[in-house]
Image (cartoon, rainbow, N blue to C red; front, side, top):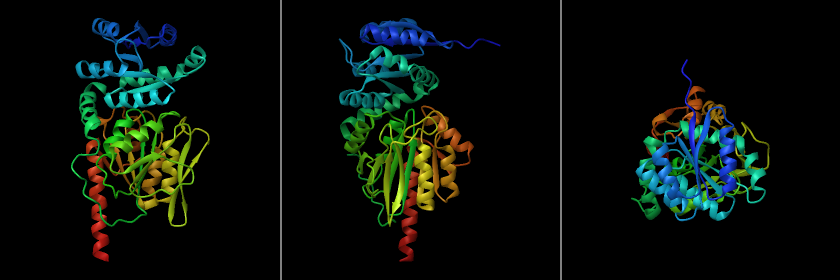
Length: 367
């Protein structure tokens, strides 16, 4: 049986300590090797050309050329899986969201203090994300993502006006789950939503400090309002609510209203926030008034609960393999029999809006 080749990684970081720590963590793994380190993007560019890595790790803030400028050029000229190494600051979070728009597969957030011990504590997460990046579909997706990112950076939500949905029940609710590659997929789903869309609740696997910037970025681009969910607030039509990183997010009912429950509860399926937690609450509280969407991501988080949504009468859409960065979570949802439709990413919102409009037409005929 042939030996599977090791994942070849180049580490790009201006900190000699970080380069050394990451190289050591990578070289401890039997299935990967660090084939080079670079302290700035210009050196990295030559190294990538000569050594042809499978994955690069890239510091956000670099000398001589900003990490984002380098990433943008790399993705335009030589698309490859990139894992960003971010700082736990607001600036670091905003730049990381931009990096994901440009096609970076994922990111890890290095601690602000105790750098050596902090990075070593993240070793398992770092190597898992390198493996996911190496297996991702970046090569065929990133050119489209970069083009869309460049357009949306200027255009925002100024595209053709979305046709209003008209009179639909305030009971309707859309629930979205995503992980690796999900920030861009969620944006793709939300951008076409009209201002009178049903309320939307979202769990994207993301650590504390980054969901605030993610929500703010979407809010600046979308017709609907987008924010981090807050405990006890009403879930209103025309708005999307994102699970805060490091917290669990579910919905409950208060009289005729949906309300957000945000709590410091244990991880589920190793995740906090977890799609399973959100989808399970949607199945129980919204039932047949719910529409589920499972987007790109590694693992099986949310698959069983999405089946519970279907069994409760919800209509579920699952992203197809060809448009996923990582097909794990959608594949598991399909395997659980949770999908009503499996669609390319760009077709999910049009299909959902068409279904909502047909239900609106039926409502008008009854009135």
